[in-house]
Length: 320
Picture (cartoon, rainbow, N blue to C red):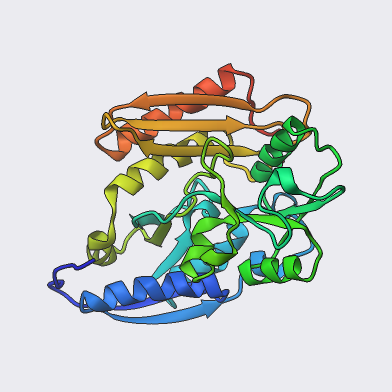
């Protein structure tokens, strides 16, 4: 990937979490911006989401726990940009902040990681599968029920990627499900026993894509980051994130949304909603439309959310 040099070089500080994956992401953006002639430093930070590991995100405040401290650093001027995994970014940013850039997407799929079996069907009796995601829990439970495997337990799994792999290797789980993108970015693709196609496990909104957040008043940064934008990815994730926003945007709601460009050039958006209590079957919808800009992408997301509600999906109760 090569870009033309900017007219005005900037000194840019990137606020980043200190996990190995977050640092890889920040260093990736640092290298691209340095290649454009900017001077780029990193500001490593530990967020509340990194510190609270004994409870699920849906019970302690949601995905915003991973970005709040980074936004404070932007607001106070200690940093200029924050690099995020988009699936960790709340659907509505605080006033005064904007998503300045969405970069080209890595593999959006879920990955099956296990030292003992290559698939769900091969799990031993009374096996334990780990996941931190309500979306994955609902989809896994649906697949296991179809296999008649009510004996398999799905247990919470928190921590950064390395911590999750360590817990697996220690024998706390027979298998875990992670985002393929993170494993690939850290050179751990060999740990993947199976990559779930979207039809098997529909990804989360924004999964595999990196987004860069800035203060809304930083026009200089919007200009500097423009060469990093990958608009086909941005349109895909805009549609996906709109579904989540329209459905309540809460990580206490098992929701999947995945858009891809079909062969005829239209954007196809698949979405799925699950009942966290398991009282209703998973609801799935598919919407398609020609999309040429972010407004049209968001309109497609609104249509998909409407279709989900019409099919019986409903947002979580207030405060969930």
